[in-house]
Length: 255
Ligand code: FE
Image (cartoon, rainbow, N blue to C red; front, side, top):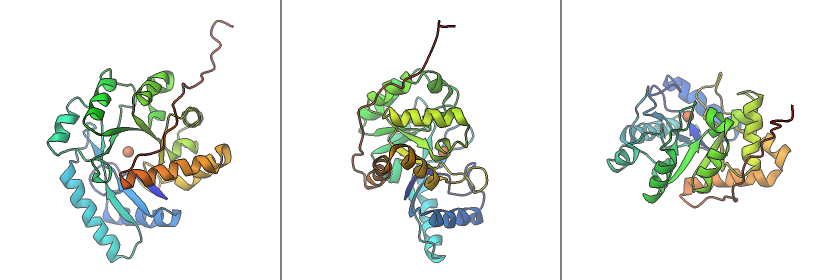
């Protein structure tokens, strides 16, 4: 398996704290059947800043250590920037890192409480720059949960999304699990990944999530997501089905 969203690099955000943590996480990944990981440290989220060059350097160093320790895991560079108005200017300045430094797919983290009004316009401009924005964990955004049509519009306009494995396994609660399933059913997500921070309260659970998807939707849906992670790493176009609106069951006015 390939995991496209992790906080594996140590000492730079709220993920791994030490090299020992990182090595334990790397070994756990291999044990779970993950052979390739994209390290995506937080950037500009109000607490952490990790710009492109620093991440490229640390990723290279980590791969050397993994080789030395004979841990069969490949770490690729990435970044998880919080949405902000000047992100494209900073991309042009060389501070923003696309996934696997491929110049194609760009993670975008929304604030957890809402979707900024400029999001639609900015995601459009990102695409005009030749990049494909991937909205990370939309299933945990309060405004999107309340109004899924916001996400429908963004996806319909060309954005991709990534749902977190632990959301599907129910570790963020029943409501988020249900909403994650609705996003899959409405073709509103394109990747499943762990967003793993540590081995205690934010582990991978990627295999568990794929097992859930297999049981609920069948192996074809599992293939769609695993293939997409592969295509992303290779810098190729990913599969997407036409998005649909999430069917919300509302009985307003009936009671
Ligand atoms: Fe993350």
